[in-house]
Length: 243
Image (cartoon, helix red, strand yellow):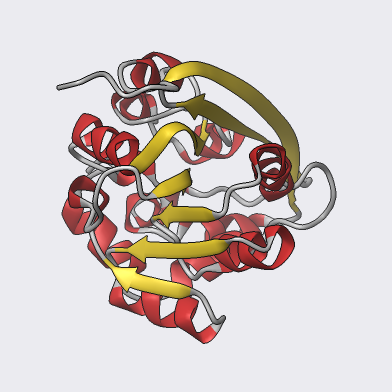
Protein backbone atom coordinates (compact mmCIF):
# COMPACT_ATOMS: atom_id res chain seq x y z
CA UNK A 1 0.00 0.00 0.00
CA UNK A 2 1.23 3.52 -0.87
CA UNK A 3 0.60 6.82 0.86
CA UNK A 4 -1.61 7.97 -2.05
CA UNK A 5 -3.95 4.98 -1.79
CA UNK A 6 -7.46 6.44 -1.20
CA UNK A 7 -8.42 3.62 1.17
CA UNK A 8 -5.35 4.26 3.31
CA UNK A 9 -5.95 8.02 3.37
CA UNK A 10 -9.59 7.64 4.43
CA UNK A 11 -8.62 5.25 7.22
CA UNK A 12 -5.70 7.37 8.35
CA UNK A 13 -7.65 10.59 8.81
CA UNK A 14 -11.11 9.34 9.75
CA UNK A 15 -10.09 10.07 13.35
CA UNK A 16 -7.28 12.15 14.80
CA UNK A 17 -5.52 9.52 16.92
CA UNK A 18 -2.77 8.65 14.44
CA UNK A 19 -2.10 12.27 13.54
CA UNK A 20 -1.90 13.18 17.22
CA UNK A 21 0.56 10.34 17.89
CA UNK A 22 2.87 11.50 15.11
CA UNK A 23 2.61 15.16 16.04
CA UNK A 24 3.50 14.42 19.66
CA UNK A 25 7.14 13.59 18.83
CA UNK A 26 7.91 17.11 17.60
CA UNK A 27 8.51 20.37 19.41
CA UNK A 28 11.85 19.59 20.99
CA UNK A 29 13.73 22.32 19.15
CA UNK A 30 15.06 23.16 15.71
CA UNK A 31 13.27 24.93 12.89
CA UNK A 32 9.49 24.74 12.85
CA UNK A 33 8.58 24.23 9.19
CA UNK A 34 5.30 26.04 9.76
CA UNK A 35 7.32 29.15 10.63
CA UNK A 36 9.02 28.89 7.23
CA UNK A 37 5.61 28.75 5.54
CA UNK A 38 4.45 31.82 7.48
CA UNK A 39 7.60 33.72 6.52
CA UNK A 40 7.11 32.95 2.84
CA UNK A 41 3.46 34.01 2.98
CA UNK A 42 4.34 37.22 4.82
CA UNK A 43 6.45 38.24 1.82
CA UNK A 44 3.45 38.14 -0.54
CA UNK A 45 0.80 39.29 1.99
CA UNK A 46 -2.20 37.44 0.54
CA UNK A 47 -5.67 38.78 1.19
CA UNK A 48 -7.44 35.51 0.42
CA UNK A 49 -5.76 32.14 0.93
CA UNK A 50 -6.80 28.52 0.41
CA UNK A 51 -5.32 25.63 2.36
CA UNK A 52 -5.95 22.20 0.84
CA UNK A 53 -5.66 19.12 3.03
CA UNK A 54 -5.86 21.23 6.17
CA UNK A 55 -5.93 18.38 8.70
CA UNK A 56 -7.12 19.62 12.07
CA UNK A 57 -6.62 23.26 11.07
CA UNK A 58 -3.59 24.23 13.13
CA UNK A 59 -1.73 25.87 10.24
CA UNK A 60 -4.85 27.53 8.81
CA UNK A 61 -5.57 29.05 12.22
CA UNK A 62 -2.03 30.44 12.48
CA UNK A 63 -2.15 31.91 8.99
CA UNK A 64 -5.46 33.67 9.66
CA UNK A 65 -4.29 35.02 13.02
CA UNK A 66 -0.74 36.05 12.14
CA UNK A 67 -1.25 37.33 8.59
CA UNK A 68 -4.76 38.71 9.12
CA UNK A 69 -5.98 37.32 5.82
CA UNK A 70 -9.12 35.45 4.92
CA UNK A 71 -8.43 31.71 4.98
CA UNK A 72 -10.58 28.98 3.48
CA UNK A 73 -9.55 25.41 4.35
CA UNK A 74 -10.49 22.08 2.77
CA UNK A 75 -10.07 18.44 3.70
CA UNK A 76 -11.60 15.18 2.53
CA UNK A 77 -12.05 14.01 6.12
CA UNK A 78 -15.25 15.10 7.83
CA UNK A 79 -13.53 14.69 11.21
CA UNK A 80 -10.61 16.93 10.23
CA UNK A 81 -13.03 19.58 9.01
CA UNK A 82 -14.96 19.33 12.28
CA UNK A 83 -11.76 19.83 14.30
CA UNK A 84 -10.74 22.77 12.10
CA UNK A 85 -14.09 24.47 12.60
CA UNK A 86 -13.67 24.09 16.36
CA UNK A 87 -10.60 26.33 15.96
CA UNK A 88 -12.70 28.92 14.17
CA UNK A 89 -11.39 28.02 10.71
CA UNK A 90 -13.68 28.38 7.69
CA UNK A 91 -13.30 24.70 6.75
CA UNK A 92 -15.19 22.53 4.26
CA UNK A 93 -15.19 18.94 3.02
CA UNK A 94 -13.82 18.91 -0.53
CA UNK A 95 -11.34 17.19 -2.83
CA UNK A 96 -8.23 19.00 -4.13
CA UNK A 97 -8.65 17.09 -7.40
CA UNK A 98 -11.91 19.00 -8.06
CA UNK A 99 -11.86 22.31 -6.21
CA UNK A 100 -15.29 23.94 -5.70
CA UNK A 101 -14.10 27.42 -6.70
CA UNK A 102 -13.95 29.56 -9.79
CA UNK A 103 -10.79 30.69 -11.55
CA UNK A 104 -8.47 33.30 -9.97
CA UNK A 105 -10.18 33.35 -6.55
CA UNK A 106 -7.11 33.19 -4.28
CA UNK A 107 -3.85 35.05 -3.81
CA UNK A 108 -2.14 32.00 -2.33
CA UNK A 109 -2.69 28.27 -1.96
CA UNK A 110 -0.98 26.10 0.67
CA UNK A 111 -0.65 22.31 0.51
CA UNK A 112 1.23 21.15 3.60
CA UNK A 113 2.16 17.48 4.01
CA UNK A 114 -0.69 16.28 1.82
CA UNK A 115 0.27 16.04 -1.85
CA UNK A 116 1.84 12.62 -1.30
CA UNK A 117 -1.69 11.45 -0.45
CA UNK A 118 -3.16 12.58 -3.80
CA UNK A 119 -3.54 9.86 -6.48
CA UNK A 120 -4.19 12.23 -9.43
CA UNK A 121 -1.39 14.63 -8.57
CA UNK A 122 -1.23 16.57 -11.84
CA UNK A 123 -4.98 17.08 -11.79
CA UNK A 124 -4.76 18.45 -8.25
CA UNK A 125 -1.91 20.81 -9.10
CA UNK A 126 -3.77 22.01 -12.18
CA UNK A 127 -6.75 22.78 -9.98
CA UNK A 128 -4.58 24.70 -7.49
CA UNK A 129 -3.07 26.75 -10.33
CA UNK A 130 -6.53 27.41 -11.75
CA UNK A 131 -7.95 28.95 -8.58
CA UNK A 132 -4.88 31.15 -8.09
CA UNK A 133 -4.87 34.65 -9.52
CA UNK A 134 -2.20 35.57 -12.04
CA UNK A 135 1.06 35.99 -10.15
CA UNK A 136 -0.30 34.09 -7.15
CA UNK A 137 1.80 31.94 -4.81
CA UNK A 138 1.62 28.19 -4.26
CA UNK A 139 3.39 26.67 -1.25
CA UNK A 140 3.81 22.93 -0.87
CA UNK A 141 5.41 21.17 2.10
CA UNK A 142 6.53 17.58 1.82
CA UNK A 143 8.91 15.07 3.35
CA UNK A 144 11.86 13.56 1.55
CA UNK A 145 11.77 9.92 0.54
CA UNK A 146 14.68 9.48 2.98
CA UNK A 147 12.75 11.09 5.85
CA UNK A 148 13.31 9.12 9.09
CA UNK A 149 15.37 6.56 7.17
CA UNK A 150 17.17 5.58 10.40
CA UNK A 151 13.84 4.61 11.95
CA UNK A 152 12.53 2.69 8.96
CA UNK A 153 15.84 0.89 8.43
CA UNK A 154 15.61 -0.26 12.04
CA UNK A 155 12.19 -1.85 11.56
CA UNK A 156 12.93 -3.22 8.08
CA UNK A 157 10.53 -1.12 6.02
CA UNK A 158 11.32 -0.50 2.34
CA UNK A 159 10.38 3.13 1.60
CA UNK A 160 11.42 3.18 -2.09
CA UNK A 161 7.77 3.54 -3.19
CA UNK A 162 7.75 7.01 -1.67
CA UNK A 163 9.47 8.26 -4.83
CA UNK A 164 6.27 7.40 -6.73
CA UNK A 165 4.49 10.16 -4.79
CA UNK A 166 5.19 13.88 -4.28
CA UNK A 167 8.48 14.17 -2.37
CA UNK A 168 11.39 16.55 -1.86
CA UNK A 169 13.38 14.71 -4.50
CA UNK A 170 10.84 15.05 -7.33
CA UNK A 171 8.68 17.99 -6.27
CA UNK A 172 10.45 20.70 -8.23
CA UNK A 173 10.09 18.84 -11.52
CA UNK A 174 6.44 18.06 -10.81
CA UNK A 175 5.53 21.62 -9.85
CA UNK A 176 7.33 23.06 -12.90
CA UNK A 177 4.66 21.48 -15.08
CA UNK A 178 2.06 23.80 -13.54
CA UNK A 179 3.84 26.81 -12.04
CA UNK A 180 6.68 29.23 -12.73
CA UNK A 181 9.73 30.14 -10.64
CA UNK A 182 9.76 27.09 -8.38
CA UNK A 183 12.19 27.30 -5.47
CA UNK A 184 12.89 24.86 -2.67
CA UNK A 185 13.95 25.27 0.92
CA UNK A 186 15.23 22.19 2.72
CA UNK A 187 14.67 22.01 6.47
CA UNK A 188 16.67 19.39 8.37
CA UNK A 189 16.17 18.34 11.97
CA UNK A 190 16.43 15.44 14.36
CA UNK A 191 13.96 13.53 16.48
CA UNK A 192 15.13 11.36 19.36
CA UNK A 193 13.23 8.17 20.17
CA UNK A 194 14.31 7.41 23.73
CA UNK A 195 13.24 3.78 23.82
CA UNK A 196 11.51 1.01 21.89
CA UNK A 197 8.09 2.04 23.22
CA UNK A 198 8.51 5.46 21.61
CA UNK A 199 9.37 3.78 18.33
CA UNK A 200 6.34 1.50 18.62
CA UNK A 201 3.99 4.42 19.25
CA UNK A 202 5.20 6.22 16.15
CA UNK A 203 5.37 3.18 13.86
CA UNK A 204 1.96 1.99 15.03
CA UNK A 205 0.30 5.33 14.33
CA UNK A 206 -0.46 4.38 10.71
CA UNK A 207 -1.57 1.26 8.90
CA UNK A 208 1.54 1.49 6.72
CA UNK A 209 3.69 1.01 9.81
CA UNK A 210 1.69 -1.41 11.96
CA UNK A 211 2.86 -4.47 10.07
CA UNK A 212 6.41 -3.76 11.32
CA UNK A 213 5.58 -3.59 15.02
CA UNK A 214 6.63 -7.16 15.77
CA UNK A 215 10.07 -6.57 14.28
CA UNK A 216 11.03 -3.62 16.45
CA UNK A 217 14.08 -4.55 18.54
CA UNK A 218 14.68 -3.44 22.11
CA UNK A 219 16.88 -0.34 22.03
CA UNK A 220 20.02 -0.20 24.13
CA UNK A 221 20.37 3.53 23.47
CA UNK A 222 18.16 6.31 22.06
CA UNK A 223 17.55 6.30 18.32
CA UNK A 224 18.23 9.57 16.49
CA UNK A 225 16.22 9.89 13.28
CA UNK A 226 16.77 12.72 10.81
CA UNK A 227 13.74 14.72 9.76
CA UNK A 228 14.01 15.81 6.11
CA UNK A 229 11.37 18.30 4.94
CA UNK A 230 11.20 20.62 1.93
CA UNK A 231 9.13 23.75 1.42
CA UNK A 232 8.46 24.50 -2.24
CA UNK A 233 7.40 28.00 -3.29
CA UNK A 234 6.01 28.52 -6.79
CA UNK A 235 4.15 31.27 -8.62
CA UNK A 236 1.61 31.36 -11.40
CA UNK A 237 2.30 33.40 -14.52
CA UNK A 238 1.82 37.15 -14.09
CA UNK A 239 -0.57 37.04 -17.05
CA UNK A 240 -2.96 34.26 -17.97
CA UNK A 241 -2.30 32.54 -21.27
CA UNK A 242 -5.60 32.23 -23.20
CA UNK A 243 -6.67 28.58 -23.35
